[in-house]
Image (cartoon, rainbow, N blue to C red; front, side, top):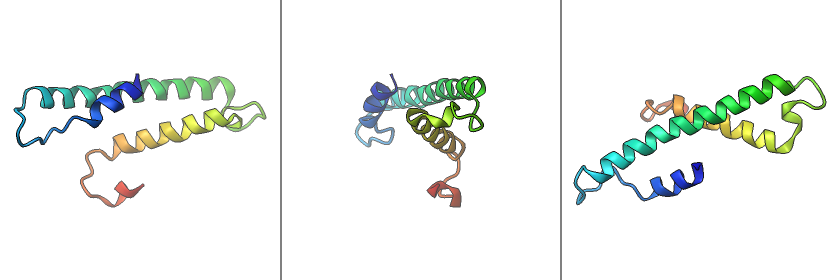
Length: 95
């Protein structure tokens, strides 16, 4: 679902000079809300797995599996992007 949303939002330009504000404005708003929904679902999944498996303490912990490391990086990156969404040109934007 997230990949479909990403492909769809790639071709939406909210600042299109020849488009009316109808479809592009609404579609852009919907894709932004879907970002929050998917990121929340992924964060909840991470949180449940980290609680049940342990984060780094045991040899069978969450971060001992390669795919979970990738998921962790993605969740942290998306949380960083969501937190910095309102920071226009700030110093933390490069993270």
